View 1 (cartoon, rainbow, N blue to C red):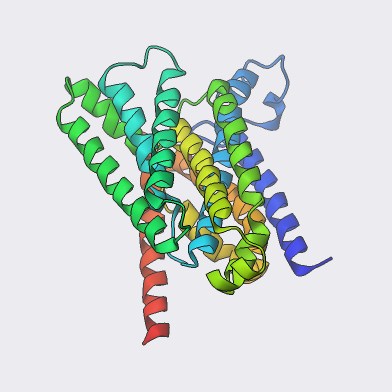
View 2 (view 1 turned 135 degrees about the vertical axis):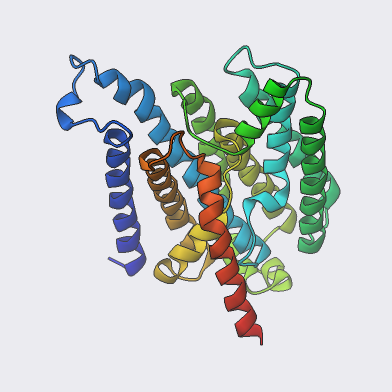
Length: 323
């Protein structure tokens, strides 16, 4: 068995253990004796903690895989799923549903968020054009992120009531609090489809490490690869934002953490990044529940507090290499 395979198995075992820990941990710890249908505490496990844990694993896997695919495609270790503008578009869609009060149904907010992600994906493909140029593609994503971010800020400033403003700001912080099986059934199929599309890019991403010209000579279609990346990342990130709000830095950190053990080929980093992202987010969600705070710390804030210093260290390390 190869070293990469052993590492993937180790990550998978750690993920299962973290998910079990997530089911029993919290402000109130639930013993193993509560794990049967006749115990009233089983409802807490099955209806509250289990969907939250499954959704956390799915969102973490989606963000970790998206980050690995983006770093391989752009050949930039600082690339993050938020760079495409898809997460900003999804956030704008969700904010508009809160702004106009379209939250009576549990399905409306995710539907608005997914619509925002779809619009961002379409605009990104339109702006990038048919050339498949990485520079044009990156700049298009930056423009979309900037425009969507400014429109989100405008919606917050013009919110009709203080309650709407509070709802919008709270949702943008990102969290898995009060999520149900409905959220899981909405997000999981979309994330799975996006993950399959990103998995199809593995060989092309390896070829791209030799340069665009060499990749073309090896049969890589830049336009098809760009379409797979945009659609795959859009589905993964859009569904994640629709279900949990904005949770940053997972896609940036996880590929860097697993790359020394999985290898430096982009295709070798995809699977461990997905498992590692799920592991990171499940553990982080368990920790925010266990934190001795009056109200639960928002998961998006916790990940930003962790990701900011990581990004700074990574940037300083790259700067020393270039010096």
